Image (cartoon, rainbow, N blue to C red; front, side):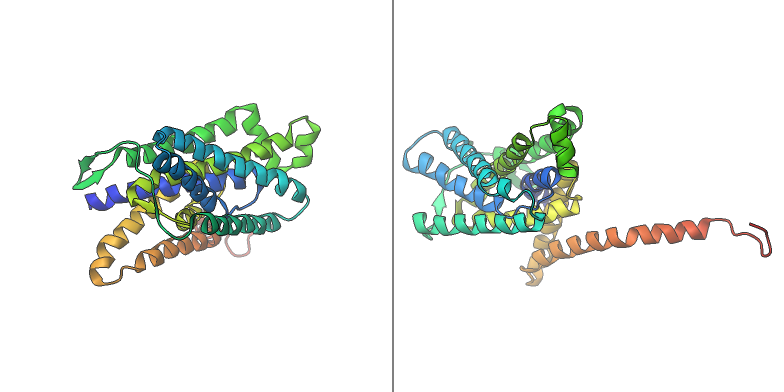
Length: 303
């Protein structure tokens, strides 16, 4: 059980970082973005070129990857999102799918299908419950927790953060009080892309190699974690990521031995469906319980 928990926390930290980007964009704009997985992959390719091919330090490659991801997010906001402000959020979400497909095609065109490598920044690790945990994996989990609760506090306690929260609810009112809505939107999309790049950089050393579409599969699980966490709660995204990480690790541990290796994704889907159904049914259940506990009037009593 200890191994399952350790492995789940490692995976959950990465899922939580992807989920944080989903929640940040959705909370600030009301849009679900599906492109940030491929944005993170594009940043990985740039880092691999700088570090593996040109021999530059890992930190330089990582900063370039994050900066490139931010640039992609900001360009998409400026060229597409800003011109679709009057559109339904679903239409903008579809546009993010287009961005992801464009990046995927560009990666195949430029780098081909051959797997790429990017060594981690720090070698070695410590053994916890029989599992070798690398410093990169520890950083991923700690960073997810810090960002989840830190960004939540920043949104609630700073003027700019309150502007982000207000922008998603009533953009017209935000403009009237003088808050720069365009700057808020640009910041949100850039920050969401940066979180995807950071998550991709931190998970890649564990896998060892990557290729086109590499981070998109992880991003889908991060999207599920964001939904489990409520889509508007940054700490909830962390909890959702850790929950799915532990559930996936448990499924891999106990189901793989039964020859059901592919069932771990079914477990993730089952948890997601259970949470969604619970949110639908819980209000009705609470109402019925309240009515059952309420004292009944005796027959014939006047109102």
